[in-house]
Image: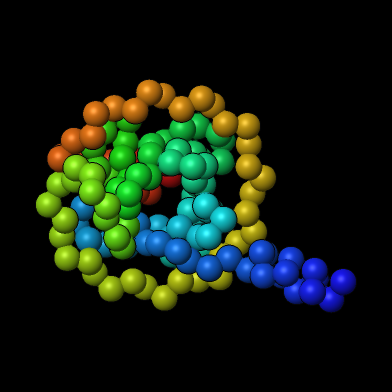
Length: 136
């Protein structure tokens, strides 16, 4: 019983597994180990379900594949710490990450809409950025 309680505590404690940078190299989002996307102020922005990114209204916002955040046109919105072997534009130098704030409790995850068919991945930057894609 004691081990189960300790194991459940470990599941509740979320650690950062990646940071999403915008096209100028500024860190904008943190990806937590449960797939949750939060900003550096601790606000819940969206969540990852496999490769699909959703907001908390269940609206599909893009894909996160091999460290690249893509919009519905296949353009790069942002990038993570490690990029895989996938098409992407020239990446800028990463700026220093700010100290993250306390993370708020996660809202309930809604029913999700069906993801669209993936676009052909481009070498271009999107006109959106990692936060604006969520219409915030």
